Image (tube, rainbow, N blue to C red; front, top):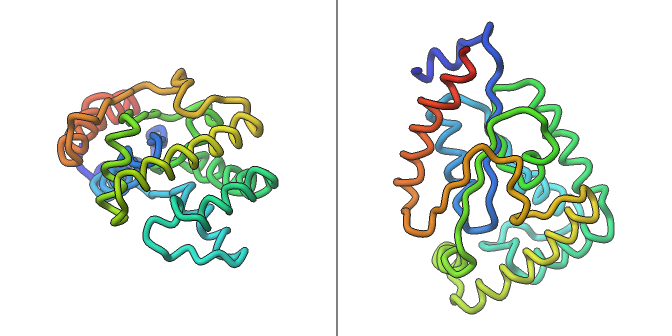
Length: 204
């Protein structure tokens, strides 16, 4: 199905794609590329939380902000105040109800009952390697920040919604191990999934 046809599918069931994976799995980059290729709106839970952090006075423009001391401090604030996450998640649910979206989110796969949900799996070492290269950190710094960030993030969602991020993968239709794949290979695989599974099933 071409992008133009997808955009004009007013009488078909709206497409809702959720792409998730731990930090460094490549989910944000891939979700953006898929949204461009298939003319779907793209929304990121992480970007929305970052915008809220900026409104609270955090300097979010630093490269690798989520893994920085300030980013981890905001994470601690979120743990003490669930209003940040609840506000973002309510908006993402509303966007999903309108359809024809790709959601880059850690929570939507569990909070939405509909949609095609994809989990990108990668080892902590591989993800730390990618983040170190992306954010110009040492591997040790990236791995340490990842572990600290993920521990706190899992605590937030377990307390708020009761699911185990990165452990309970029951909501997902596709789980793709990306350790031995580069970004282009993962993108091509997801395009095949979109063309032959997601869009085909939505049209029947």
